[in-house]
Structures are given as structure tokens and as C-alpha cells.
Amino acid sequence: GPRAPAALRRADGPGRGLQRPAPPRPPPTAAEPLQRERRAGEESGLARQVSAEVAKWVRVNRRPRKRKRRETEEVFAKLLPDQLLLLLEHLLEQTTLSPRTLQRLERTYHLPEQDAEVRHRWCELVVKHKYKKAYGDVERFLQEDQAMGIYLYGELMVNEDAEQQRLARRCFELSREQMDRSSAELVAEMIL
Image (cartoon, rainbow, N blue to C red):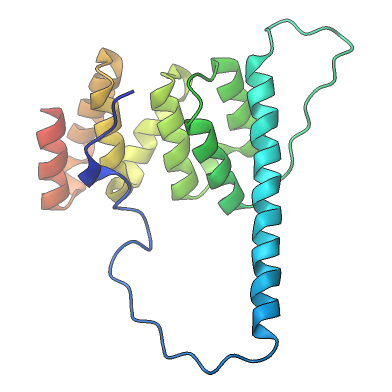
């Protein structure tokens, strides 16, 4: 669907603000290239694990509602927070995820209890797929993580879904007073 204006796309996440310049690096040791290679290997292993999990979720999402008794239940791996973030980003690329898949995703990874980055992606999935059972998670996110919530307001408004727009306006009214002025003005411009 349509996306929020480029100015709103995740420019507000942690670690994206002002960065200190890196201290000068000492000359490389003989072991450094090997360490870098090992780290890259570990990262690609973690990324491969995420790809396998994405494939499982896509299969689960495609399954008909009624399963045959003998069909094996998909077993999902425990994921590190960064892997969970990557998984949700991959799932955001899916055109449709059923409410059943979203509910199982939420229960499998306890998404409402994860860190702000993961909850943000979860809320994006909820909004994208109009998963009404989790609108409470979106509401909580907009009130508790205001700096990251700005992008989500844009997502709620751009879908032109009356219920999502009411949710955005209600949350804004509740948290407007606690927002910094520039954020409040930006959100007001989007939703009013």
C-alpha cells in the first residue's frame, strides 16, 4: 500500500541521531581479518536462520484453516532480538498475512513485551493487515514510545481506514501534551 512520507520513515529510531566520530583505530593485528571473517560468518548464520523462519511463517500463512490430523505442526526457533526484527521486516514484505498467522506470531514471540524496535515492526504488521485484535498494542506503542510512534501515525492515516484513523486521532489527543512541540506539530499536520 501507500507509504508514509519519506521524512517519516524510521528516521526516529535509536542510534540514528548524532553519532560520535569513531576513535582512531590501532593498526590491524594478524588475527583481525580472521575475527572479521568469523563475525561475518556468524552474522550470515544468524541471517540464514531468520530466512528459514520466514519460510516457515510463509508456509503457515498459506495453510488452509483446517489441518489434517497427521500434518506436523511447525516448530519455530528462538530468535535473538535482532533476528526477530529481521523476521518482522521480511514479513512486512508479504502482501497478506492472515489474522490466524498474526495471532500465532504474537504468541510465539511475545511481541508486545519485546523492545521498542520489535514492537514498532509488530505495530506496522498490525496496521498493514488491519489486525484489529492487536490495535491495543498500537495504542500502547503510540503512547509509550512517542518518538518512534510518529512514523506509525503516518501509516495509520495513509491506509484511509476509518477505524485506524480514529485510533490515530484518539492516541494523539491522549499523548499530545507529552510530545515535544515539533513532533506534535508533525503529527497534527498528518492527522487533523
